[in-house]
Length: 358
Image 1 (cartoon, rainbow, N blue to C red):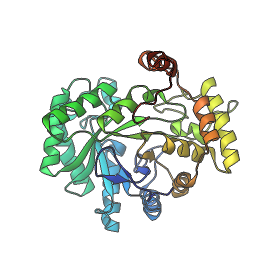
Image 2 (cartoon, rainbow, N blue to C red):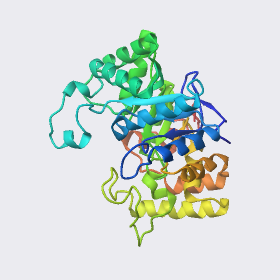
Image 3 (cartoon, helix red, strand yellow):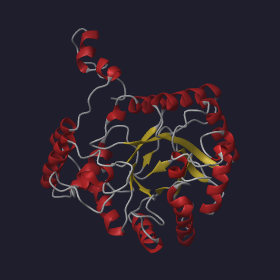
Image 4 (cartoon, helix red, strand yellow):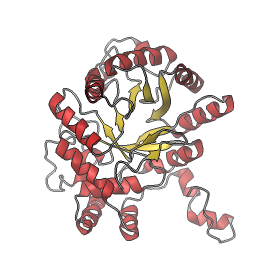
């Protein structure tokens, strides 16, 4: 496989690379890349044949969008690139300030129609384009009616300002309700879900993956290396590092569990057999999972990105996939435990029955 082994994103005609370039690191920040390094990362991805670039209005307070737009303009690659950005977080205050109770315009965030239009216009200006190929709702706000979201985003598709839309970090029922409303009303619906998914974070397999399959949405994993944990650079007796799992970060030390260390041990064994880095084996596993359309990878250097891209050429055999699947098997929740193979055999007279799409 290579980055030019393109895949359809969900039940749509949008064709994307199996690895997408995440640009959260573009722009100022502790774990980020400056303009020169960001340009090298962008070019390394394009040189490898990648066509799917993902950013967000919140990344580096808009600087990521500005850099992505600048690089696309410099290379004259707008028609060749599937450009995605996101809306949702408040544009009038930082997430940290808002979390601590700071003031801000409540209508400059969330998924209401007023903010969607505001956010898109601002993103298009920063990106230097008059449309985006994919517009993500960054996170579910828990307030806006799903009907309003579908109506607003569908109107933007018809207006030509976005080509498609999708949802990031939403409950499965929200995505499925949106898909159902869109189908009933014969209007554009969501084509993908962006979710945290990796060998150490497989909980979304229970509800989100079936919803995605039923609703015609491709799954786009973010943090497939668990914030760097699956690179193998951390060890049980030494978790100190300058990476994202050190100091203030969204994960804290939540990845350093006995279960995850055991998964990492198996990953290291498989990587040694393949003659590759643990990160590459982890990405190869993610790309091979049913329902996964494109896996989001980010980097602070071009060399780091090239190492991740090399994962596209790595193939896991059945035994290696099984060992990784078994080591990382999530604890079944209520509904998923009822759908176990044992229960299914009870329903079908002791026979093994494979459902459509499995």
